[in-house]
Image (cartoon, rainbow, N blue to C red; front, side, top):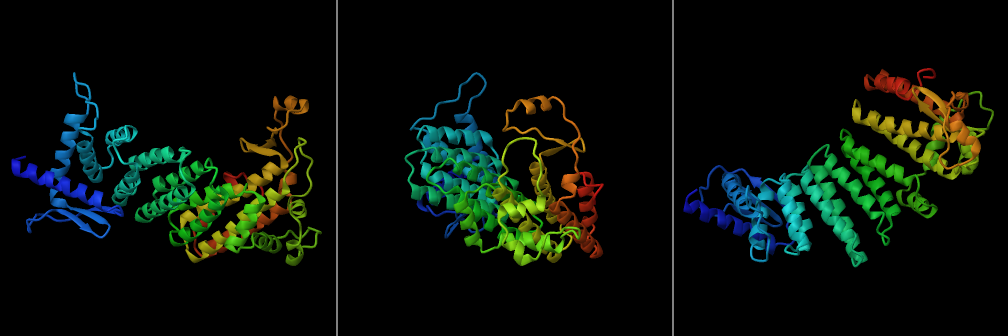
Length: 445
């Protein structure tokens, strides 16, 4: 590379650095396809809050920056890596910024950036903005997400962080996750990062994580309605559902008020329309809506003699069933409106599996090698249970298969599978095979 090219690359590095320093609102970076420099001007483009670089110079800029970083700041045979100091930190940071914008999948450079943060040679306030720039062009860059998680952990573990800053941080992080998910379909990196972030917020005392689960549950419903073929958000929605199962009473009533959905009505609607004929209980929809949680669960699952003395929380069981049956109705509507989408059937498998798991837990059984056997309670320490743990015997499964809930679920699935099959949806037969051979219902379906 001759002296003119050296000077041009240095000017490009300087221009990029100036834009990043002057514009704190910078939110996007991309390579602009331009074959040659006809106008003899800087290839660095800056419009509003977006940064761009013309493609004709990318190769030269990248090789120049990458070569200097490797030559001057990394160890070589028979030579230790030079220490980063106040003298060379600014130059190193400028080179790393440009190199990572062009090719962010360089873990060694992200590690060097961590070193600059720990030695206080880098402004912490700009790091989240920089990773957002990287992710705007490469929304599936796992190295950028990994660095962002590392940096967020430094912030969230700092006891001096103000509550308002935490709330702004949460809003910004979820916004970044939404942008990366929108820009790249099936982006598990983005949704897994979102799950990690919510799990980290559990440890933040001043933050109401239960209410955030409710907001995220609403958000995921809006998102999947527009992206029915993208399973990544369904996976995230399942994470939210499992966490909503165990929110406290105050958060539960807040959920009901916030989303304006009668979960109980969704459950009762399916129960009434699929109630077994031999059930003697009066089953009008108006009467069942007035049932308490204990009475409703007793009616659906019937009384059972448990293997231990642990008391089942029928309120939690009832809430779980209400959410799952609401989810089942939503899945019905999506499968009718958006036909032949395999992703929706996969999510249905999750719903059915969770409902069956509730029944297994209630009756104290577990499926092993295709058969239902007694499940030893982990909470109890009685001598009787210790003796039974050595030998697991086959368990009478009639109490499950004869329960109202199981018959309601089986009847509903048979009807829906037949409807979808008549509509030409081949995934209906696959779902039936799943129920028979994965959930072990081949004798009752």
